[in-house]
Image (cartoon, rainbow, N blue to C red; front, side, top):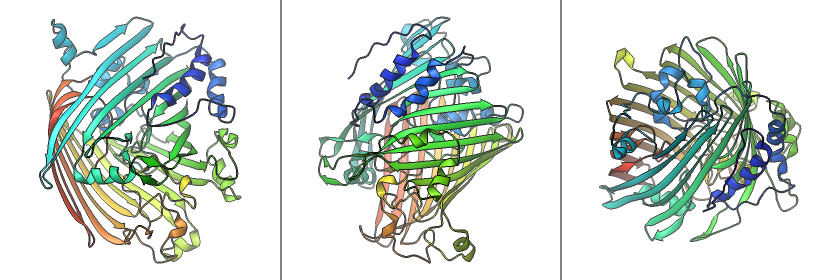
Length: 575
């Protein structure tokens, strides 16, 4: 572990803090081997450092809420209001956007029983307080310990499973302008067969980093995340960290999701009138093919810039446009490092360069939501990777018409049923989406898609229902997906984003679901008793049913688990 002491004298030393903490955040993650800031990549820090030096007096609270579907579902009535509209697509949210004069803890406890009146220290810490907390008028510091201890069994494969996680989270703020948070997770876990197969293939736990073997069937993996948030004015926000981001209103995102592993990033947001703008620079990693157990080829780095412009058209309708560029930082001929051309934050400028011959991988899209009533909304996305209008009009199934669509609806407390939340969603992604001519420039990071765990070439329908009464909570998720799989390791029907589209099987006649016709059924039921709403500490039982069927493969999982868990984060095993 790296122990660091940073002394902050209010707002006078943000420049050295950022220059120190950005490389530190990289080093904290034991799964990533990154050099310290050097002249070739110092451009990653320049915009932030300049803005910090020129910072003006501060106005707004900068604490960031966790990217956690369960928390966001409980906040649905605040997020989708007909009288207080807000920009809901850019996550994590800032506390200031959702505050009604309350504090961060009361927001985390939304929709849950939260009682801190106990006189017994152990009772208060277990059921209503952070493990440690210091708070004054000028600063706030909290610390929590997250245990995830579970045991279970895959009844279909007669395979036992277990999870042993110890996690520490520290968060704090100075004044109303500067906040930070960091988390560290140490894990040993034995998975059911379908997840174990993916880990054995990729040497990565989905969304959680590179593995070491604890024993032949148990994996050891650890990772850290951290972020600092600074707001020099009510119009501008700055975040630098090593973690995940999410763009959209749904359970999935076709533009940028939190499915893949943590990455270092610098994000600027601007709030002006009814407009919210985001520009984020990130450093991603392309893990090459595994040579043998525990031995991999050198990891290649790539850069990414993601931009999103959202307009609150009316009090009910919000529409945003998106673009991203992925580029290779080095190859056998050149070492580009951070490309200074991408410091320009103007949206849609980079695809113009792409049309003039840029070798980088561009993607554009749109996100929208319409508030039907307080707590109810329609939402959707459209993603466009490549297309030619002439081929699209001819409906010829040309491989280069690569697109994705999402349509969903969500509602909190329908028919005034307090504690009930319902959501339905459809996702469609065409073959070869997110692939690139050079696999290093694909829309992926750490052996996973940046958007969807199924990659591309699929239809997906999902439904989610949650109900809470007191401290008791229930959750049911049902997924059905239809996708086309490759018949061999060498074939490419457009599902695997890590393949080059030059290896495609045909030019024309492509369609969604082509290849080996595969059906995926996934259902998960969870029942929990919430001990502490601030860190989501809960006693939980869950049951997962999964069935995968095609002409080449059939597998079935019936996985039951019981244990205690904490933390606010999304982990996706629904693939």
